[in-house]
Image (cartoon, rainbow, N blue to C red; front, side, top):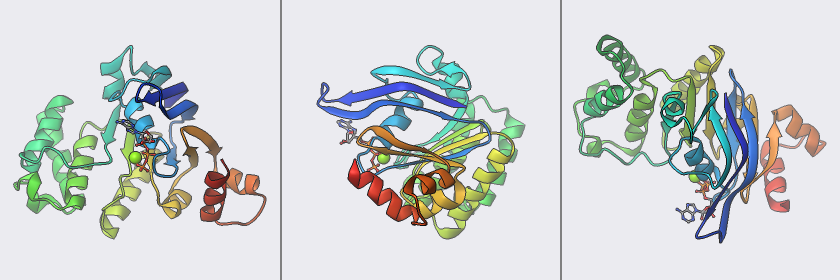
Length: 242
Ligand SMILES: Nc1ncnc2c1ncn2[C@@H]1O[C@H](COP(=O)(O)OP(=O)(O)OP(=O)(O)O)[C@@H](O)[C@H]1O
Ligand SMILES: [Mg+2]
């Protein structure tokens, strides 16, 4: 479970209110989509949840552990995939995965099995010995996803994880998200693909100019729009009007 209470974040000495007093709860067993226009505050929120940025105010708990007060325990709860996978370029894929497994103290026999299974699943096995800098964008995205999942975290926190993935890899990741939540665990991810949100998510939140303007199920969003409109139309109307 991920809990945010009255979380805010300003940039440039308060000139930019990137995240403005947001509260939400992402429950166990739930695929939760985080939507909103460019610059709405999604990445800033995700960076606060993962402890990369400090919130100016409010509290964030991951499976009950406060990200500020109990940061190591809180960080052990999740696997995080950032929006930009361009990193660790000087490592080979397999070196990166072993590095991540070391950081999260995954025992040798378990890591070997998980690395093999995940590399196979994402068709990356043959590239494991290559430098990450030689990977395509999608391959980098996939190696980061694998690295984030090696310690079998209960919470997956993914910033636009499907961007740049080919249809097969996107399908596999979505399938894995479903498997994960069917075991009572949690997926929180941002996306611009409304169709994905519609088909995959149990609930969504829409953020606009730093404020949550909707949080709930697809049925609830349709009710509030009072009609049979597409999510695209509802989304555009909601984010226009604010
Ligand atoms: N390091 C920073 N310094 C100053 N302003 C920033 C910084 N990072 C983000 N911002 C501003 O904060 C606001 C929220 O940005 P954020 O990256 O969280 O949006 P986003 O919803 O993730 O957008 P996108 O859909 O484009 O990824 C924007 O106005 C952005 O310009
Ligand atoms: Mg972003």
